[in-house]
Image 1 (tube, rainbow, N blue to C red):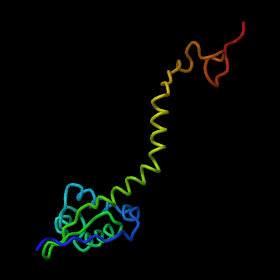
Image 2 (image 1 turned 90 degrees about the vertical axis):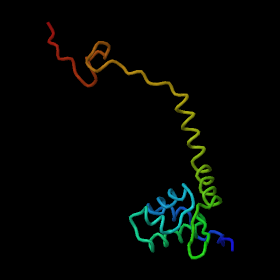
Image 3 (image 1 turned 30 degrees about the vertical axis):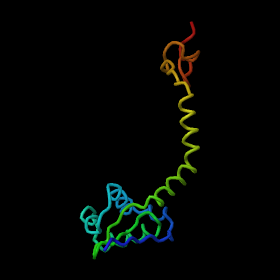
Image 4 (image 1 turned 180 degrees about the vertical axis):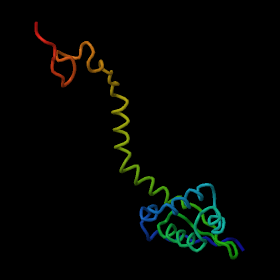
Length: 136
């Protein structure tokens, strides 16, 4: 019998799901390929039941999918969910990042001036210092 795949439309907010460090680590591990719950739990400092709860939240947010192979559940990244998050971030930050890059590329580096107290530092011999030479 072929594996059964569970594809449910996302019900949760992917950014709420990404707010937790352990869930981000689970996504990173799944980025290397599909894994069973026990394989993920072996890599994390949390219990299998905790991994299962995190996977349920990631699944509800549309970021992971689940396939059943007999009694095992194999989880993998869900491309549609990850692509949706990436597209959102690109819309929000893409223009800002492009403008920042353009500004950085078109701004000439500032040449350092002479150190304070050296010649050319001004009539007072330096910033904020009064001329203390006695008049003859």
